[in-house]
Length: 353
Image (cartoon, rainbow, N blue to C red):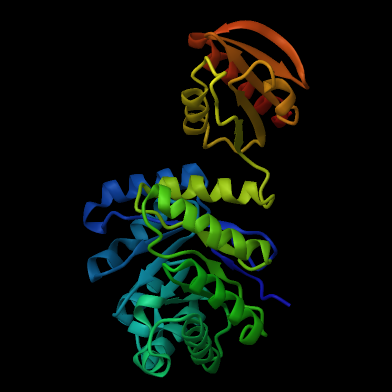
């Protein structure tokens, strides 16, 4: 039986998978930080995390929280006093890395979180494991990650604290997958929710691939309650990638899904730019819409028959089709995006009725 509770207004442990991301602008540039957090919220990020590296950040934390309608999590390293200050500032959750906080300070943070009825994420990373575990295992490994998480969960349990989320992240995808599986098999008898991600995954391209493999594998195993796709990129891209990942696994039905062909020598329209533009400009739409963008008249309609609608073309002209039938012909390259926009707006309007 999995534990269930809330991070702000977001349920966790109820069978759903929520999307997280993290701001990358310091509190010293508050207006930029606020704008970034609001952009994440608009894109569909359900839980936002912000670094609290100093006292000033803790003092401004409440200002950022007031600007948002989604939960705000304080990310703490090294100094437990910043966790205490963030809790007082209204944090909806605290993320601590026990390996650099210290057991005696974790207990103090647990008491404060208990008093405010907010959860704590035990965030274990391969790069900051406790010295005794590194001495025991010789190097970071799945066994060390799982055991570190278990040991630090026990510290919180000994304080009578059980609103716990657990993560065991590594940049090595196989290590990360093995750590979560081992923790679930050996240590998670109480069913603590799990936050899943590949840390330091890399750039937009590399990080997307590594995250899709690591997060996707665990979600298919039924492991994972919240996810973050960590990218060296605009955090909004993390949310977009996470939404795509969940849709691909059938765990989320909302949003635009573009079905597009890889193109070949028969392609005589710029379907690549069109498909990319649709994804970029309509990524914030919550209505589930599957759009086909095909570059071959011969096979386009048949191959995209399950889409809500689609376009396919040749020699600079497109046709619009729905339910496998052509409904409009001779759409030029200049007109096609406007036609697609009209169709999207029509479906969104129908969905609201």
